[in-house]
Image (tube, rainbow, N blue to C red):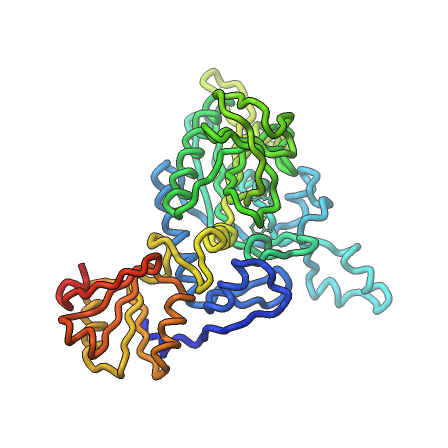
Length: 420
Ligand code: ATP
Ligand code: MG
């Protein structure tokens, strides 16, 4: 992509309200735009990062045999009433214009109390359970696993910390359906390792953490926590084997002996990047999802659900990978593989760019008519792992000057070797 075609620009400052590192750097770099409190647009650069994250997640979800689908954001009242979650106060309720129009002016003010018919989906256990009941009859139809990557809506009271907590945010939600608890427990372990692989591929060490059930289940759940000062969660974790518990449920204290090894428990702030839930039969009971076993007896389907927030994941990566000049993306999630900078209005740079594109390299090409200083500063702020500079000086030295974002070492590489 030619940078001259990118309509966004980097900026030196952000509004005083954005106190978190991720919001500041992503806004300054032109990755995101804040539309309202807790509501962000992914600009072209940011959307490319989201695509990279989505692809990693898709690969790992497909590898464990789950299949992708896409459910509606508008969730009708009857779904959440069935499980007593309609009035939890988590979602944004929606009223249709035709229903509003039927009301007299004074009554209109009461409209959202009277006419709530949908909620903007903040999770989809109910919706997928109802869909599943249309297709599941016998034990032969189980198990199956399905996921989507979709926007969720939650009425977070005071959204702060940028993409870490939005009112509208992207989530990968996976749901699994089993004949019994044992089969669920098996798959739960499989998902655990798939999640750990996803976070590792994104450059993050996530701790598998015992946690509370929240609005989803009475049971324990497991969260994937990344240690970070800005994190809103507090966990206890073992300094040796990394066994971890969320302080919400833990009976341990700092300095206690680990349950799993002879290490000591430490406390830290952390970011919950993922959460997995052994749902059991809560949703299948409420929504009548049954199957016939081998002897023809009717039984309740056993379920699990598994979430990862994509925006929160992106923000966590930025919180971990930055310096005073900007973001330092791990190459697996960087918006481009290479940032090519043309200095001195160099004619050869265009040709080099074309060749790289033909060879399938993802390049952001800074062809803009701006100062050298500005190009370097923007490249550092945007944070693409590899910077390649074409200038008269570099060409005299025999090629293109390469520098990795996380290193000071510069190196000349021959033009023919660049795409390698
Ligand atoms: P939190 O405790 O941080 O409010 P949650 O436990 O309510 O989150 P889950 O219902 O477990 O969230 O959602 C699954 C995943 O979706 C979370 O692990 C997180 O990565 C992401 N997520 C949840 N809420 C938000 C939000 N408001 N903004 C961005 N991502 C979110
Ligand atoms: Mg959670």
